[in-house]
Image (tube, rainbow, N blue to C red):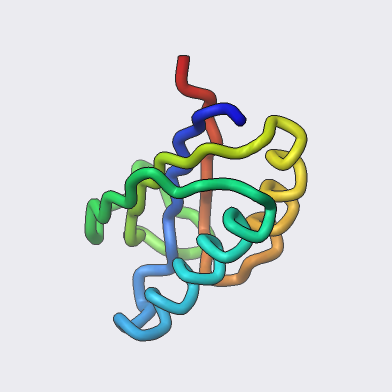
Length: 94
């Protein structure tokens, strides 16, 4: 197991229920892959540096997770096709 930080930017027009569902789906993928979620930090709605998918804002979340390095490819694939996610970044923590 290795520690990673996962930054998620969700679509800005999601209501609270849809946002929670999308976040729970991502958490489910992590736990189903044998990982642990150490910390979830909601940063709120912020302006994007540039327009992504015709959106100027996004709802940011930072997750500190512990997963196997081989699982990052599967998590990457799942996040790429998850519609509410505008952008994401998975980085290893030293």
